[in-house]
Every structure is written in C-alpha cells, then in structure tokens.
Amino acid sequence: MSATTTTTDPDAARRAPVPAPPRRRRPPRPGRILLVAVLAIAAGYFLLPVYWLVVAATKSTDRLYGSFGLWFDDPRLLSNLGDIFSYDDHVYLRWVLNSALYAGLGATLATLFSAAAGFALAKYRFRGREAVFKTVLAGVLLPQTALALPLYLMFSQISLVNTYWAVLLPSIASPFGVYLCRVYAESAVPDSLLEAARVDGAHETRIFFGLVLRIMSPALVTVFLFQFVGIWNNYFLPLVMLSDDRKYPVTLGLTTWKGAADRVPELTQYTIGGAFVSVIPLALAILVLQRYWRTGLTEGSVKE
Amino acid sequence: MTTTRTGSPTPAATGRRSPRPDRAAWGFLAPFLAVFLFTFVAPIGYAVYQSLLTVERHGPMGLGEPTLGFAGLDNYTLALQQTSFIESFGRVFLFGLVQIPVMLFLAVTLALLLEHVSGRWAGVLRATYFLPYGVPGVIATILWGFLYVPGVSPISDLLGGAAPDFLAYDNVLWSLANIVIWEFTGYNMLIVVAQLRSIPQELYEAATIDGAGPWQTALRIKLPLIRPALVLTCVFSIIGTMQLFAEPLIIKLQAPAVTGDYTPNLSAYNDGFANANVYLAATKSVILAVVACALSFAFLSLVTRKQRSER
Image (tube, rainbow over all chains, first blue to last red; front, top):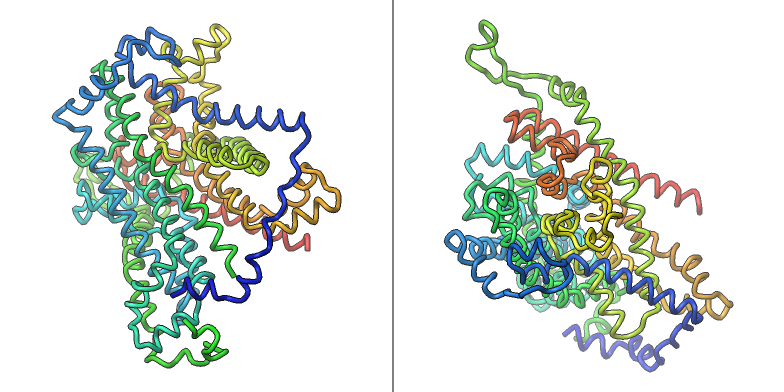
C-alpha cells in the first residue's frame, strides 16, 4: 500500500531520472597512501585480539604458553571444542543457550514494546505525552549498571533473585528504543495513512500490527540489534542476580572459569576456546545486521 | 492508496472521525511503562529508601540484637568520607578525560577517511572497525588480559625487553582505556557515518565548485555538520565511563594494582557483596547515578548554550 504511494508520488518521479552525483575528487597521491596506511593500521588494531583468539583457540594448554601467540602450533581446534563442551556436564552449552534465551526473548519483547510506545508518543495527542517522553529521556541518561544493585536489593525482597526473570525483566524496557522508535515513527508513518485505515474501519490495534510495524521495520531492526547486543554483553546484572551457575549467561560463566584457572589449569584454555565460540554468533549477527542498521538509522533523519 | 491526494487536505481536521483514537495511546504505552516503572523507577525509589537506613546495634559493646533504624544522611556522610570512594571518582574522571577524546577523535577520523574509500572496501573496513562492539566487554577484557601478560602475549614477545608492564600500577588505567577504546570506537564511528550520510550531497558539490579540497571540506563543512552525532556519542561515553565496572573487575584477576574500589561502581558492588552493607551500597549507587546524570546534563547544557551564543 505504502509502496505504491511512493512510486506514484510525482516528486519521486521527478527525482528519479537525475543521475547519481559525480564522485568526489580523489585526494592527491601522497594523501592516498597515507589514507590506505591509516585505514590498514586501524584494521590491524581492531582485528589483533580477535585473530589472537582464533589462533589461541586451536592450541593445547602448554603450547599456549610455549609458542608464538600470532601463529598456529599443532592446531587441535576440534578436540579443544569437544573438551570445552563436555566439561562439567555440558555446562558451557547451557550458558550459550541461556544467553540466547535472555538476549533473544528480551530483545524481541523490548523491540515490540518500544515500537508500540514510540508509535503512541509520535502519533497520538493525549494529556501527559510530554511528561512520559521526558521520563523516557531521563531513563536514557540513567546509568544501567547503577540500576543493577538497586534492582538486586528490590528483587531480593520479592524473591525474584536467582531466577530467569531477574535477568529477563530488566532487559525488556529500553528507553533508548522508545526514543528511536518515536523519532522514526514521526517521520516515516504518514498521518494520512492512519486516517485512511481508520476510515476503512480498522481498529487501532490492527492498524499497529498490520501497518505500522511493517513501515517501522528498519528502525525495529536497529532497536533489536542494540538490545540484543546489550543483553548478550551484559555482565553486572546477571552477576548480582544469579547464584546458580546453570542459569548463567556465557559472559558470567566464562569469567568464573577464568577466575578458577589458578586451581584448574586447563580452564585457561577452556576460557579462550569458550570466548572464541561465544564471539562467533554475535560477530555473524553484526556483519549481517550492520547493513540494515545503517539504513534504519539514516532513513529516520532523511525522510520528510 | 489514493487518499494521499484525493483525501481531505487537512487530515487533522478529520482526525476525530472514529471514536477518540487517541485514547488507544495508553494501551500502546502500557506494556513498556509497566516494565519501565518496575525496573527503572521502582529500584531507584527503593535504593533511595535503603540509603536512608542503617543497622543499629544496642546493648553492651554493641553486641545486642541488631535492629534496622533510620539513619538520615549518615550513609551519605560515610560514603563521602571514604577516601577510596572519592578517589575512585577521580580515577574515572581522569580516565574519561583522556579516553573519551582519544576514542572520539579516532571514530571521527575513521568515519571521514572512509568517505574516500569506494565500493566493497568501505563496507569491509566499516564492518571490521565495528566488529569489537559485538565482543562483550568481559570477553574483550579477557582477550586483552592475555595480550597484556608477558608469558602469553605476542606483543611482549615481539617487543622483547622493551615491552612495558601493561598491568603495573601506573599503566593499568591506560591499559583499561585501550580496551574501552577498542570496544567502542567502531560503534561511535557508525553513529558519525550515519550522520554524514544524512548530509545532502549538493553541499559537498557546492564546496568542490568553490574550490575546497578534501581537507577543507572535511574540516569546514563535515565537522560542523556531524556535531549532533558527536554530542550524542559524548553523552553516551560520559555515562559509560562513570559506570565502568566489568573491565576493572576482570583485569583485577591479573593485576593486583586494581583494588576492590577502583571505580565507584566496583566500590558499591564490594560494599553490597563482600562487606554485606547493602545500605552503603545503595547509597553509593544513588550517588553514582546522580553524578552521572548531572555530568551529562551539564555537558548537554554547555553544548546547547555554546550553540545558542554562536548563532
């Protein structure tokens, strides 16, 4: 529906035939060399720890200390991975699944709630709208980890600590998500479309789920990515909330391994291999989602 | 869809056709607000309440039954009199004063340089710089931790005797700064890139026609225009620096120079768990939240005032 509106829009038709703007002039040659050098050094810096991780994950415990860190020595990745996954009754697998649950479910709900709230703040006029929006903005500025300890104190009063809810619930509210959704909905969801749907007799809920969510999808990808990464990377909250290591997310689990490596030497290698495995899904998600993310962020500010 | 053109020219005037659609707003807000009140507003209220309490001991030599009493601002006095707590604030201020400018300078430089790379390489490089954002801070610290330790680190192997002790008392703060820079430069760069893309191309062309070189275009036109993105990244960085926690906690496993109250957050955590004084922990959390909010508000008002006076 909205797609046809765009293509038949006379303005768009006028804009379309204009050829792409000519490429900007390339900087002169010495500048070009400097440019390539700086970009390459930066790439080396950002890749170094990840590359080291890949190499180290293939080594045995004594090779880890006895060989040059940036090159392979007697690689044995598969047997390493087997050890990591089977250690302590497959606890590592539990951690990965827990992280996936916390981040997947938390980010999905956060995105949906943010979309609804952002849409409401952008497209309805009601008393208290500004007050709600200001509160949300204050929430954006509030340090998340300063909240973790108070949350723990509160949750321990109502026996919520050491449950999945203790980590999930605080991950579902995303003030920044609401802010982004409001900005995007304001510019991307046309009032006329909502009016038309209402004239057709559609209920507000149906308009939201049938129309608005689809139009807002680029912004929603952004919110989902932010929140997913945020929850996956979160450490303080699960650290204070959880005592049962079967409920740990992977970040918390790996640090307990690292902390215990003094007593159990092979845990050093398990920490490295575990870190390697845990970085893969997120790296892939980032590479794939990065594309959508950019379009989502920019369209919000460009569209009239 | 024809309403765009054939419909009423003033959609606002016809907005009251269905029975009060605006009332639906609260329905859409309800799920978010419920969770927000429960996990943001309530804990702050509870922490403020806890910060006003203390355990009192009565009887001879304070060995009687402990009771919970109202302490007024005693906890705040106690927290602010702890030298180590005040020092931890000084430490994160110093950290932020160095780390934030370096990181944002790198982010802006990379974003501007990437403008001159075309095609597939731009995408590959952008993804490379952004990659560390996907590595949890804890895992990034574990990784860099290995790169800092002489026996394992290839950096120390390469530098030989010239390698500094990254985890020594004087160096560890900057070793931590390096980890944070590594994690967040790409993220900040992407925010700047997004802002650069929203600048109309015509502006650059006009500048080129006026004879501006790439350096001049970058400094005179792009830099002022990405100001909103810089303000946003600055505020997020200030908040992030104030709550520094996971990185020092993990590096502490290897670096004895990092104490249990190295940062304000770490100090609060230690009071709550190691020292089992939740009231003091709540107090420190409140102080930290207030300082972080005050700093970001101060920064925002400074920036907007400057902007206004420039006009």
